Length: 462
Ligand SMILES: [Zn+2]
Image (cartoon, rainbow, N blue to C red; front, side):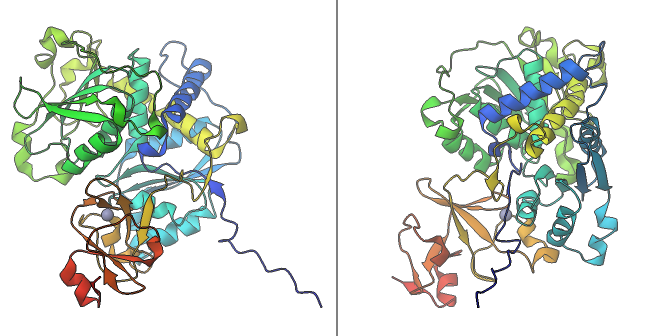
């Protein structure tokens, strides 16, 4: 008797798809092809008078469904995604306030994503926890687009920001952009500075007091995205990030990128960020930089485009709304064509223009990921990380990427917080490494916060 062929399980047939969790999941070339698609939509579907506005639709997404899962209120981002899907001819199912429904009954994000994966063709996720989108993508067999995960990243906002700069006729190479406000708690800024560094722009940072760019974001800029940082002597607390070509990693290389040239005083764009009330104590509000007509009176701002991800509080004067330099309402409008292009390319609605698909949804960067045994050793130091969410405990494994800096660091797989001090052990012979070699067989490895923790777990010095 011949044996019946084994039944294929869902795991064996893991589809090749594409997720977007971080702006760094997209190569520069992919960003540019996304922008030419968005431009094409504006040219063919744009309002004849207000050229930045999409005024009609297509039917290429006919029969497709996007699920918007918003665990944190953000009407504008949600409406922009839903408009984009509908303009493409698709439909939307929405759970505007999952906190009031399934979560209160104890359903985990992991289970919600598994269930919704069988209803829709695409998940758009907004979540208050850092790393929630990366975590959700582990359970989804349809594309997940990160619409903001805690203080981590907001890649589609960055795409809109970058697209606005190109539409305002700015070149990324040697673009001189001033970024002011909350550089610490603003996730849109983290995605934006990575992308601008990759694209060869020069950034002048004007953080509010105590809201400087986090040290790990700055180090990452230097080590991975070719950003060189220097203090700006003219203002306290201000500094520059300039492109530093030799360190540009291969994935992002722009072959013709010239060495950075002096750009003088001209400022091409001013990017203002909102005071993130929900992420800080109230004290910061007093010293918060404000961009108004007085600020922009300096001749170096005479041709600057003013961008703001909106909503604004007091940091951006409404007097500017009628100023020709104000680009922020156009920036919000561009959210529709940009998200249309992203949805169309991630779903492969035009097979010739689809984003490349991968098993697991991400390009293989060759990074070594250490999957921690249950309950063991090192935890992510970021308390707002999804890995500390109690309702996810039964599904979640602590995972760390081994980053080959000198000295090496571990990076939380979900929220990308870096850990500088740690000990790595080998499960086979329960030894800890004194020096940290590049781990060849990550599945045998386990990470500890220090030697004492390792010894407590029965590990000893090699
Ligand atoms: Zn984490």
